[in-house]
Length: 256
Figure (spheres, helix red, strand yellow):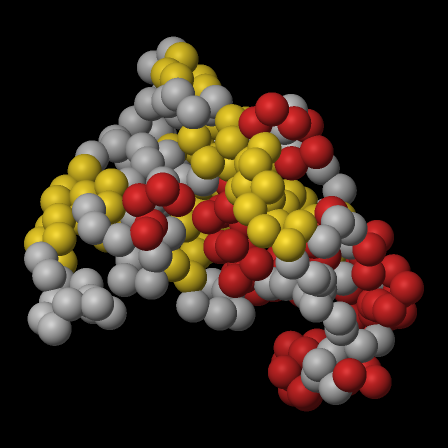
């Protein structure tokens, strides 16, 4: 697919928790990474407010195993921290395929950054570098590591396994800067894994009965006049564009 990247993300532990369990107490991970978690990982690899990442599918490489740990989370009401049991996924590895589209709600203020060629080449380069920001598998204590791959290559534990269903799961959030509506909403769906691969429904295809409004929210504004967006003038990007010997290659020169 156009503007698509493929990468493998792995780690010792992952915690893709149900939003209901995020209020405190015991936390138990979903058996699969959520769409929102994979979107966040992809945005950690490369993101700009002018683009939106769409996660197409994920392939589970290693067997689904859980491991419980005793955790002392910070208590904001009790004088001492309390003991909780968190259940993590252990020794995880996923192949991910995603592509980006332009955020049409940003065209008015960020239209000058709607450069498909630029974003695709930088994102592919960032996959090779392991991402621009730290990668977490659902929660901050679960460090993830990104490397390039070809989706579907290599042996997976669930190859030829057949179909597995996981009931109702959290899909992701509808943010006002992506939907154009001043409301934060949550999406839910019923994933099905076929031979280790889960194909995600795009956010716009989730039926309304599987969405819940959470609270009013305003979209953040970006722009050079607001001093929070620099585009190609960002120093780090200029360094990334520079090829060996300090020059720029033909592809990057065309972008600039």
